[in-house]
Length: 455
Picture 1 (cartoon, rainbow, N blue to C red):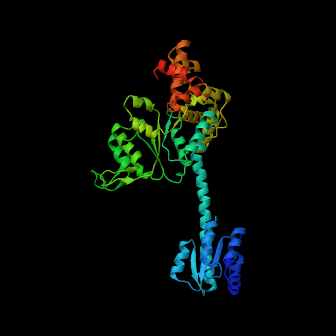
Picture 2 (tube, helix red, strand yellow):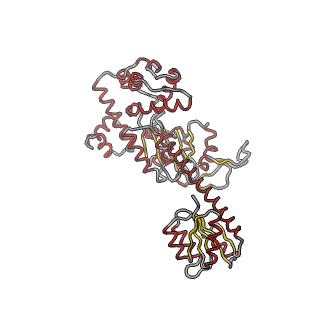
Picture 3 (tube, one colour):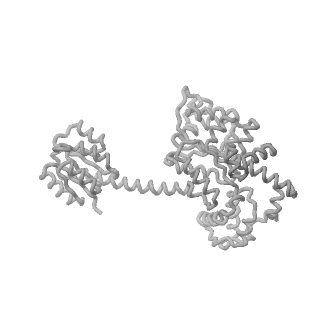
């Protein structure tokens, strides 16, 4: 389809000349005699290019350019032309958004050349927009769309996280190992206005204690032996983006103080630097520990905990979302087929039942590893129960009794009740009124049980 061009000039002979030249060059051309006609034309139809004279009666070229750019949603290419061109007028036009400025009189080939340059720009812009769209679609699959779930509790968490994602609010994600805390954090980042900036993930427990400060805050050349160049720390690397602090509970006490200062002051001071630097970072922290217990035992600073725990999310273990297991297993089979060249057709019903009757202490990560092992053993066939581990021959009842540590119904009831109350309180950040509503008991009853169980 031909690019659409609007020519705006008060001189009739010039309009006809430009119409003839640009039509032969392959453009679909419309004409306007002044700025007002041009504004009416662009409000009625879309154009790829506008070739506009600077000096016109009524609404001149500069005024047209100002008003057009205020309503233009297509980033249309505007080229200004004038017989009275000066450096000042050219600069003004370019500052207002003109692509180029050509001076009359000009050769017909010169106009076509400028338009062809502009056409190349339009082509590149369209290709960039397409690539950005494709990247965003890919990033979307790295976000919440990558969380395979139909579980009501998980969907509610995702919905709430999507709302929190719009703001810079600090987020604390808790949950057992293998529940997908980093994937959930990436979902928050991708749903946020920071999606085009860096997502920097770090496991706080994997960095040696003596390197933590230089890793997080960076250093200047000569700060210590071996510091041959300046190096940005993780906070600076995540500037205007998101810093994901996995296993935040492993952070040493000395560094917790410095983290608190970064969150409060929004600045870091690299080792060896004379002054601090401002950073704009969204913090998402995660832990498998109960940080409230860590605070009570003086292993984690309460002020840092409150700074991180602004928007808490507790991811349930796989055993609490078993309705997701069939779709997760199917997803992992498809993934393994694509990445390992397997041709597994399906998971047999007997095998699926065996998966459904296991407790999954390693959660989704353990399930993925189990399906991968079974796929390798199954070759290009169906995954059967025989391809799965025996898991010690334990039944669901055996594992429940092992977890409870008692066969007494009375004691088991108390153990389960205590655990459930503790988990609900943790999920609502200690709000007892909300906890009572969720547990469907009265507020006084909840207070009594908290006292009885020493929670």
